[in-house]
Length: 89
Image (cartoon, rainbow, N blue to C red; front, side, top):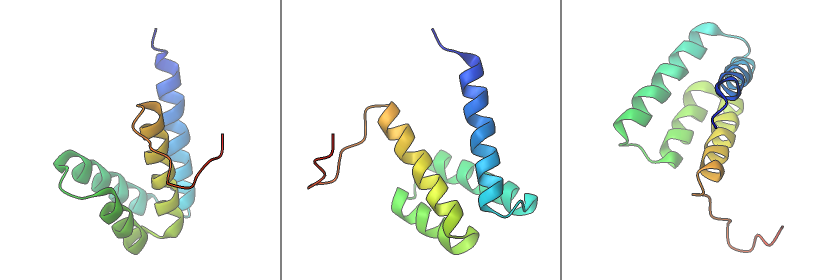
C-alpha cells in the first residue's frame, strides 16, 4: 500500500532543503524547479551535465542536494550501482 503522506512529506522536505540550499531565494527556487522539470521531461541532458549546470547557475549546495535526491531515487528504484572499490556493507 502506498502512503500518500510519505510522498507529501518527502516533497515538503525536499522543497525546504532546496530553498535552504539557495539561501531562501524564492526566485532562484522557482527557476531551479522549472529548470529541473524541463530537463528531466526532455531527457536530453545527462545527470552529470545537469548537475554541472546546477552548480554553475545555482551553486554547489543546490548541486549536492539534487545529486543526493538522484541517488535516493536510484536506490529506491533498484538502479544504483556501487562504484568500483566500494565494499562498504
